[in-house]
Amino acid sequence: MDFKDENLKKGEQMKKGLLTTLLILVLATGASAAGPAIYAGGGVSMPMGDWADFYKMGFGFGGGFGYPVTPQFEVVGKVFYNTFPVDSDVIEGGDFIAISFGADVHFYPMANNADESAFAPYLLGGIGMSSVKVKEITAPVAVPEGESETDLTFGFGAGFQYEMSPKMALWVEAKYTIISTEGASTSHLPIFAGIKFNLGE
Image (cartoon, rainbow, N blue to C red; front, top):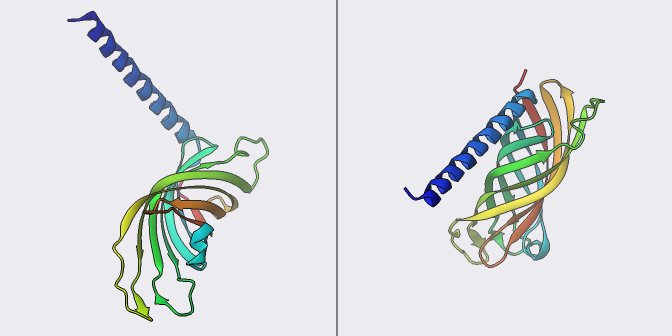
């Protein structure tokens, strides 16, 4: 066997071993943090940029499942439904619908403070996909519903949680979201609030 090939194989094995070790450490650290949680909520979504010339403020709702990786970092898988009405007094129908799914990372900068507080601000960033379509227009001219497309979605923002009991917390967040729709990106700012149900002990 060629020594170069053998060294490459050994190097790959070391990399796999290192990644496995890191994964075990992350999981072990997560086990010592708070337990998993279920998120549910909704609110308003404001179209941003040029897109705001065509659509008015809409609304959305959804939920997710959060798992703490460390006391300061939580990964939250989310699914949310958003709808935006056309900004026109003449057109009927034509609502823009976006069903978004993906994962956010929450960073709690005050989580390691010695003084525990019910108030916990956080920063967030995430990536996912959105299934989007424009609904049927019924007036002044009938236009059939557009075909749905699935586009890359990413966003960033901030929020806070307020612990109401060991098992329940109020959350409020704003997340600037960009959907990479064909031709031009579609951006909006959801401002949502809801309840977080802690499943840990």
